[in-house]
Amino acid sequence: MSLLSKKIFKKISSLTPDLIKNNIPGGIKNFLRNKYVPRTVIIDIVGMCNLRCPSCPNGNIENENRNPVGIMSLETFKKILDKVALEHPGTTVAIYNWTDQFLHPQIVEFVKAIHAAGFKSKLSSNLNLLPVNLKEFAKSNPGGITISLSGFTQKIYEIAHKGGNIEVVKENMKKLSSALREAKVSTIVSVYYHKYRYNLDEVKLMEEFAKSLGFGFGADWAYFMPIEKVKDYIEGSLQKSDVDFIENKLALNIKKAVEAAKEINESCLFPLTSLTIDWRGQVQLCCGVYDSNRFSVGSYLETPWEIIEKRLKTHPFCKGCVRNGLHNYISWHGNQKLRPIYEKIIQEELKDKPINV
Image 1 (cartoon, rainbow, N blue to C red):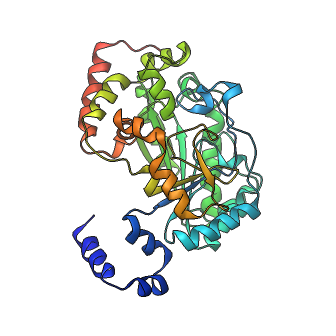
Image 2: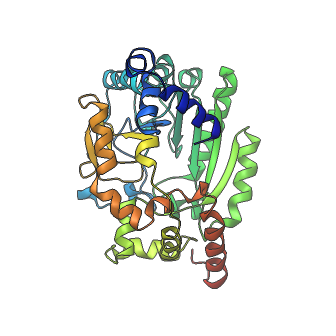
Image 3: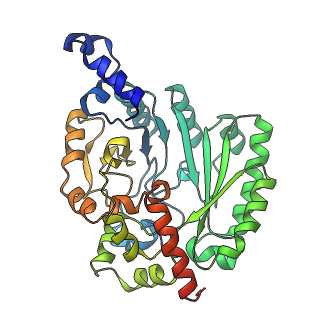
């Protein structure tokens, strides 16, 4: 907590309970209660993805163990937004986690609903398909769109973005750029390039292409998810196809990474600084786990926030996750302590192990 935040907290805490109850908005009440409130609400409005990326649970979870497939109704979505507005005002709403929201036939209405409720919107897509009615989508002025990819040529791209076509993606990038310019909106589009051992030579090509369309560009090292499967890998119980991908395609050695993460003594804030909801309206333990039945802590609309909050804080999976440093592992991109350690591990891996495409 910053010095200013501490002063504000001390000042507000001196008020009587009745004043707090009657005059302070819900978000500040939550802050007073536990210091942490969700800064981002993550809502998967669909329960499906059009690709099978091996770094993602949609590609590395067996068919029989995948989460239920379906789409959220606009009515349910609006009810969720109303509740979020009361309990967590000022947050950003991201309508993706493990899925691609452009699969939803009412994507335009969902973006409009976010803005009508007073929230900023965030979207992310592999862009192998475009939203229904692209012109109307552009006019809805999404706050930010991230395009996720991992190559410039099909040979390289299809290794990690399995089932996708990079030429389709590039054409869709052009169409999206044109539609947003025509709509004269303020939407910020960023291309996120997932770096693997084998695709580093194409980073510059994609960067130049993205910037020619007026898009931002960033590239960073890919890692394997979800948390429960990383745990399986550490314990030696992961299936061979996943092990082969981890050890031959990823630049980051997960075993070394997790060992380093264990040494970073930091609490996990994921369940308290972000709120993750699946397409059924079920609150998930955090954005890093996949199994929506195992990690559901209750219906967001039907469960009081105090109960959800308690379940998030006391879930039995969290203890083992933190003990193994897995919460640090999945957030290492923004961790100033881990970042230089992981960069060193990656450079050693790239130097000592030949690239295998």
